[in-house]
Image (cartoon, rainbow, N blue to C red):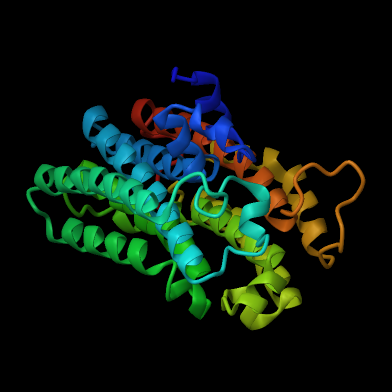
Length: 346
């Protein structure tokens, strides 16, 4: 078995589909982990941590090694969540009978690439690495009370998201909170080694990216609404219906840009350079247009990403928006550090 760096890159960028166990068995350990944890999606965790690091750098708190350890730990924790989610759905019979999840990416359990005990073993190792990163954060911050609380909250959501939160229509809300204000403010707090006066602004600055991540999750749950309803999975779209869920997701996408405008022109926490994110406007308009209509019964000719539909367009928007958001923050940070008198906060 040789290390397949090309597969690492592929798995970090796209959801890999694979049908032959022989092909799976030839993969190295890292490739298997990246594919099984759907790392093309979990990379949003890295985006959240980069945003937190830049905001900490603006205020003089950034340290590379602690940031790297926490970022890797959270990325691995997200992977652990996906492994547990797949195991839980498999054990509950949700992922059987050509369910939506098995149509867009590798599901090692359903496809027989490994068994339930192996899945749990991968989860245990992954979770242990994530916990070690959390312990480092606790030690680095002198066992700060707020960090202990965030550590406990993260562990609870990881264990409870698959069931019961997702079944109660609360999964989408927690996706927004965790990958937006909580994770971004949390990493900032670790780097600052405790609470600072700017934490509330940092949390608000995390809202736009958290909304963009939630838009993918809501879109995915609309895409598989019928399948979830048959399986008894009570996601938000199942509980409120497709039309209302589409309207909510359109609102979520628009709020991303409204919050950024607020942060630029009211408290002036961001400088006008953050208007750079509006270069993602074309993808926003396309996503809004898709969401304004019901999901088609079958894919349009030449469409490559079926059965994902709403989630695919939300993901397409998130990739460009997230990159522009981070690029804007890089310039914004440089302006705050080297030209502190430019665009002063109110």
